[in-house]
Amino acid sequence: MRDKKVFVNAEISTLKRLLIHSPDSGLGKVVPSKAQDWLFEDIVHLDQMRRNEYDYFVKILLYFLDTKKIKGRVREIDHPAQQRNFYKPGHPDFHHSDKVIEFESLLIDILDDEEIRPTLIASVCAIEGCTYQIEQQLMRLPSIELAKTLLNGTLPDNHQMIFAPLPNLIFTRDLGVVIKDHIILNKPAKLPRVREALIAKYLFYHHPYFEQYHNRIIELPNSEYHFLLPDGEKDYKRVTLEGGDIMMVSPDHVLIGCSERTTMYAANQLTRLLFEKNLVSKATVIKIPPKRQFMHIDTIFTQVKKDTWVLLGSLSREGEELEKKEILESLLDTHVSDQLVILQFTRGREDKPVRFDYLEDLLDDISQNDLRCSSPTRFIYSGNNEFPYGDREQWTDSCNVLAIREGVVLGYDRNTRTAEAFQQAGFQVICAEQLIEAFEQQTLQPDELQDTLILIPSAELSRARGGPHCMSMPLLRESI
Image (cartoon, rainbow, N blue to C red; front, side, top):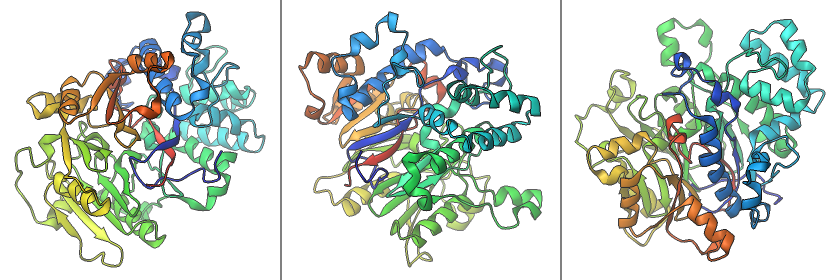
């Protein structure tokens, strides 16, 4: 491994290492009556999601980031007799990549530590309200089985569910975000994600991979004396933060979304901390409608190249112009559901924010002034900005793409009108299966790809309400 194991200063520079979590059996335990409580819109077909969809995501990532693990082996590892063992953390045939890192593998590692194991078990049992007997039963499990139980909520011997699964853990972006050589830990807005946030905290503080970064982990505290505030003020001063609302778009500029999941109070705290630590000189706060269909800012736009962005037209200049309110009123009025507010703060001049009226204005400013593009900024719109496909495809994560490197991004195959928009912008569009076959036949090499949208099968993945950007936590990118 390179010495600089954790570093990200841009969204689109070449990806070297990331944290993912493959769909575990907990996803197959989501029942209709609890689906929305567990932040799912529907139940999913687990085997289809794994074998025919997410496995392609893993294979593409390995081919670009850790080629030796997979090159020439695809037919072998996908043979039915192998039972997907290549993708199963804890199995002897697991890929064990140190570039495409599995969350569950790291968890197994720290559970082997006899000092960490009892405290983590006790912490999980405390927040889940487990009995002392259950806690002792967990203590006796081997680390591989214990890791699975902590994630899927089910005891291995009798398949008894002792607490809820963690179906949202596949969206590792929300566990934390790397800003240069610092790690920002999330504070989830929804109760079903509290256990995964707790386990993630143990990983970042106790796994050897992150040992040199303990003093560079940023956790947002709750507001002072929050426990004394009246209930109404508790909501106003609530601190919740999720990774899908944070984007490092240039070496000195971070975007922070205020959304259904990230509060204005948290955005204020994070901006202050990043300025104090001299990590960025600019922070742009983007207040989006606090609605389920938007959730985070990375469901509305993501970056493709220095001069190219994919975004939702109905919340941009291309959409209907909404009635404008005074800045202060817009920020504080939680009843303003459709008001988009964009304020840019500069370190040392925090009292003089710059306001942008449209997303395009902000993104163009980033491309032209932060990244110094010589070409005009281009916008690719969800659903090719055609009604009703713009909103339909945004719902299935057309704007939520992951850049493997500048101009080469992963998206979902069901967003066909958005793929057409990419083609019209001069991008090659290729399905993951075709691309892997070309790699295996050596008719194409990963380094040869330029301006390409790679489409991952997504019938079940898209129903989980998160795209490739959500399903990844970049740990290391080349410095832009």
